[in-house]
Image (tube, rainbow, N blue to C red; front, side, top):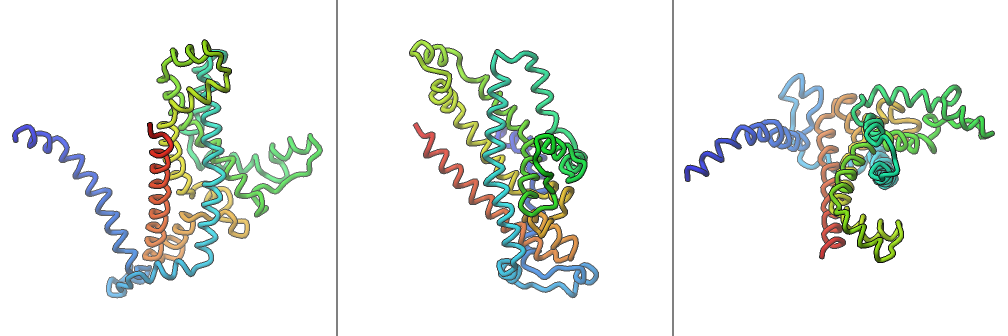
Length: 292
């Protein structure tokens, strides 16, 4: 009994912080999504009305929301595999003994993760500039006409995906590096004795040993990419022709541009539902695929 009381006393401050700064705001936002809270209710609480699920029903009838959801899914479906692949490839290269100055390269490749997103997004806007951007300059040297990367609806989202992959892959690279360093070397020695090629060692030793880490990285990356906001906010402001409006950007405009805070809260919980369902499917798939 004394040990139990002592344990609860130690964890009580952390639990209190979680309740105050997580559960209470979440419940408040859920309650807000069931009201018509807007700028008029902010000025006078008597204008606040309980509308039930009307915000959710109106949301499902809003074309811009479906376009934002489609843009976000496009960003996730293309960006997540690309980010995970680049992260794993970089980790394999930096784990190899053939690469010199590995510590320097690890620091350099991880540096974009800790840089300010807004600052580097402004730099990348200049790189993507249709007239004097370095990317179009390189294409021009190859005889390829310039591309309006952020002004063409066909290229705006791919440009943002490239920037997001560059900005975020270093985080997953460090996780993969830790996983690679935890793989016992005798497994590779046994595979080489059996005549396994480099690809066979990767397929039958590295990937199975990295399976749990790969599942975690997939879940974290998907959850993070569903929350796309800062990149289109800084680089395109949702354009051109709303081709880069994400769900979070749509929520931001609903809440802080049009002051429809009840509707914005409904968008947040719809996005939470999508992330929850995708994460649950990922966990179930990982358990089924990597079960002994």
